Length: 545
Image (cartoon, rainbow, N blue to C red):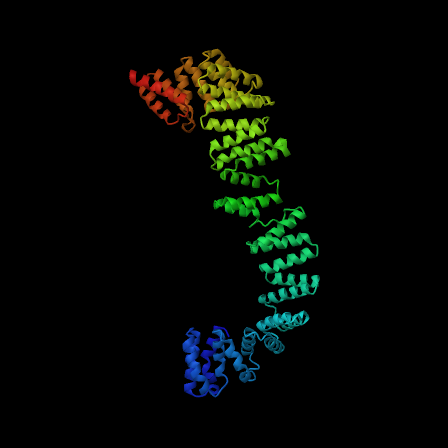
């Protein structure tokens, strides 16, 4: 009896007063029950011991039997069955206590017999039906188990909790080899309780046995969504998906990929690698998963494995060499040190010496880390492999910029001219040529020629504006240069444009602004050349000021 029923019984105890006897008996029953409800079992047992001998009614045993059952005194209950069984013959709660106590004392046959007898008398009692069904199954009488369930379902209204009986019917029909009946019943079960995980697992198993693979995959997927930590079912699902060559039903909450990501975020890289490998077995062409594996391997310093993976990708599809080389390069966005990535790209270039992208991406990282000499060597190697004139032009152009930073102006113009031969229409290239001839080339006519080739629609580009101002500066048209440089938005300034503006102010005899602007430029200076030129200007301003 649950507490609600007991409390209800306690409130109406006075109605049983004639059955229990005098006031003393009622008092003892009240305190026995009160202490029982309060889990003071020792005290409750004490009051029942006082009550039982003095009571004239068998009803005083009802609470006592519940107490014995709640305190696991099954043997004492069994000893009382012969004297109380007839008196409580029509009481389902007490009869169930008798049956369960017999079962606990290993008297299974007597327990089963009592349950079977009760089920015929109480066809609408769900607990008796459930335990009687289990009794018939223990006795290997599945047909009687089905009859018991059907009798209950026919004598009680359809309730949500009855889903378990359709689940049992499905299991029994499966045991009897009646797959269609089993599937019909599990369908009803899931209709009543759509989030019953074991129901979805049984349903998927039945559908797989009937060859309905698509539905089975859906069933296994739903089961894993409801009960995610189940490796055997996950492995079976993915094995089934591999066999039938589909990834449509990969569970989206706890797929191998999701688990790999979860472990990766927890910095449990070995576990992450295990799950991403399992995922890639299913989807070997999933680029996102491949990138995650590379990231994991990079953090684990498994450089050889990364090269092996990327090399395999390139060998399988040579047209994808840029994509997979770039995948190594992009690792620097995920916290992997640039030096380690440069080493990876260098190793890849040894494995694939015809892959210009390994040189190009390594050169980019060298530029970012100001390793200009190494960057020039890498770009020179890349330039010998390029069969695309526009790409070749960009490589030569970048080489010229590097040589400018290295103050090697002869090689700068050499590569600028090579770039121009490949792509004479590049605005950025023409801008750099104009800049060179306005400064180190000392030929304002050539500077104007190349600058005039730039698309006029791009005259808001700060780099182009800076070059135009520089030409005016060299032509001693300082006010025009000032107007252009001051029109460049503040957030687009760099050290070079501010240096040029400071020089313009200096030529216009505004030394105060020149000094302030040169100091501002220091905050933007990146290269040694910029710092050197700014220091030179500031020295002139302070010395002559």
